[in-house]
Image 1 (tube, rainbow over the protein chains, first blue to last red):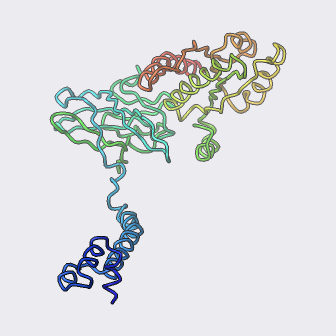
Image 2 (image 1 turned 120 degrees about the horizontal axis):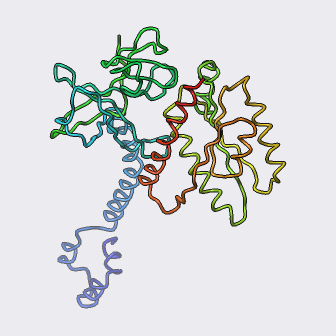
Image 3 (image 1 turned 30 degrees about the vertical axis):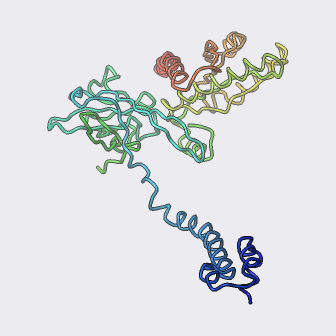
Length: 195
Length: 153
């Protein structure tokens, strides 16, 4: 009887009903999705959708730390060909976007880069280990072939080692580097050299 | 050093090394001149921050000192004198004022301070890399002057 009442609302069935004057067997075979089934499917669909809209973002949040790029590990192209490097330290500028809280800004840094006698590339951070001024290569007449800090006359040898009895207490930091297609890539952060 | 939570502490610990104050002077007005005043504020602050970056260990960059364009000549002088007095030799050996206005040249001279008068540049329609180049060009001219000032100690 339930089936019949469904049929009653169906326009086509209604026409059929008036024609045959009763519920034919062939009509019951055609009836593949009942109202009850339809409602169950709809509820499952909507429920499933709502559930996934809650759980999927949560899964994404949970996985987020794994998907984040490691900070400081990204290397920046300096647009300098490695062939151009000599054993004389060269000032190399490189720019990248730096995040400061929610604010992103373009930052430009530089490095003193040279090849040592073994052909190894050394990329020094210019930041003085005393109080953070920028050091310059070969800028003091009295101290040739050294890094000189104009603030408090700090000195470093070419390999970055601090000269004793000058204010700095540690050697200059070094950037990580990589060579890709002949170009020099530097890390955004310099690392301390353990002396 | 900058006048921030972290660096103010470093400054107080390393006071004997940081003998130079860099002080931006900014005019403020809220009429039509405000357009220039805002522009010069950005311009001077960008330059000062770049100088500070180079000489972090010896320069303390103060927050900009601002004066209203409605100050009269005597008031301006008074205002400047009060600042010089409170920053003077007991705390800093060198006072380095920086701004775009001509009118401070004679005042600074009178109080025996250094004042860098920087020509104003309209920044409004420049994109960032170009602004950066302008700042660098300006800073390049100032750094040797500061080193020389220290050299003459």
